[in-house]
Image (cartoon, rainbow, N blue to C red; front, top):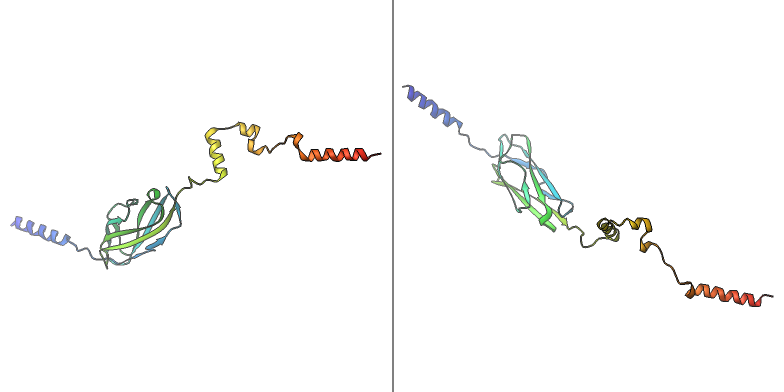
Length: 187
């Protein structure tokens, strides 16, 4: 009798623990984004805010991205309680991209209208100007590489100006000719 009662009690408690995961309605703040250009090698932190607008908890079981350079920083599952806000954090590593890039993020969970929601962003990844540097950058790089202190003491050869050979200077020759002419006509 005790065993039957105990079995019935265990069966009732197990049956009452099973809950159905009901769909949750959400609002995603700015699901489609356009970021300003970033330099290649910089990391871009992308955070999507998700608001659970239903009376049911939201469970995001999986976050998929369209590129391996986009990594989710969140532990799964992401749980957002009813009428609360949560977020999906992603890190975009720009080392493997150049130019215009567009990435999509798919979050799978108990969403009301679909099994997943889609978010996207785009940006331009600008390569570093390693091949086109202006003259000042080249000078500083050369100075740092060679450690040339004598440029500061003696001055750089390119900044010293120029000199001329006085024997072939046409101005001095003309001045001498004019002076001779003046001397010859002088009384």
